Image 1 (spheres, rainbow, N blue to C red):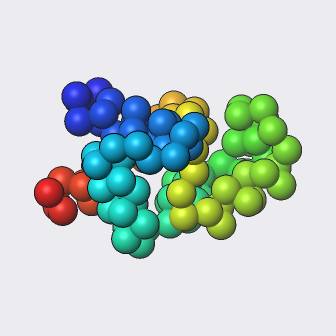
Image 2 (spheres, rainbow, N blue to C red):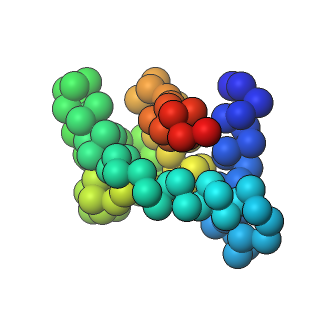
Length: 105
């Protein structure tokens, strides 16, 4: 994982834990708000492509299938959850955010 990806993950995680405290995290927050991709839809599409079900993913993540269906409707999810899903599906969902940020720098 590149330095920039690690930086983004750190900023996102810190945003979730504490209110923004510096200029960089505020910029990241503004960029992500303006980003129109629905990460939940991307996860659902990948599951369909892999011919897997929400129940299968729920079992792998260790949650109820209803929680996976909630994720499908979310525009943004916690980075630790996204990392888990990325590893399970062997797909880097963070690349979606990376491409957006790269195009807006």
